[in-house]
Image 1: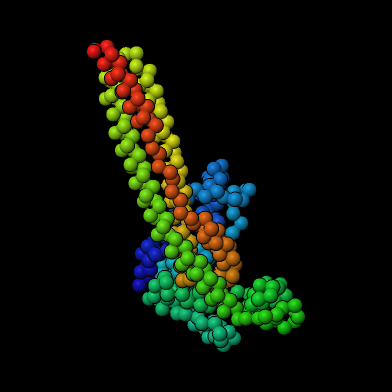
Image 2: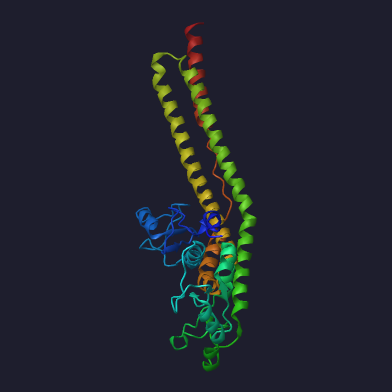
Length: 359
């Protein structure tokens, strides 16, 4: 039924949008904190030099990361095709302009029945799906089908039409059969599919290690929030105590009262700043962990082999950096012992003075 896939696009694929503005963009950049932003949001964040999601510094001097989020960009393009198919509009063959009944995901072409038969005759390995079958399925089914058929070609310009099927472990490059046979420098080959699976598994291992540490960060975050609340309560209680005691003093002791209140405010502000800074850091790391888990999950679900090969080293490095940063921390609680001691000394002095005045 035309349009039946729209709710899925609305609900299940929000992750492919810019995390800053929530809009589609053909220019999505992947930051080292593993959040994804469009160029517009990056431009707004450039004066600050921090990710607006977790406040991690953006290391690039220009403020524009070099790593494109190829997974999200390509998913947007594939979903646009799906929307076009389920939209109910007339579809025409890209070859003869007759009404289209088939879609080849490898050629990215709509085909009529006649052209589809010729297409199958000359490109038997390509699977052209019926448009009506795509409309009856879900967006996930469509993406899974395009993922299976999405191959990438050799980087050698002379072999640009050759499908990559081999991975050279020595030079860490994907090769076509021609490159592997003609260039003697390559050695220790393995199947490209095995290499992409290994890289996916490697990302999964790093993510699972981070997940073990996440509980500790959540506990630290909760403890910091509780400490902030305790500090507020202690500040209110001590403020009231100071005011009650100081109001008993004579006029010449008002200066002591002001000094006590100033000391209390200074300790309170110091504690608030330290707690806020540590809480912001911990929350930022948690957001990076969540972004890493989400990205690796979506890589496992939807990434093509090309996307895995292009993005895995960058994502792996970012996850390993996050592993090294994932250490528990606890801000030192701010106490009011000095302030209380000075208050007690003041009370004793006043009481002692009162006893001298009223023997």
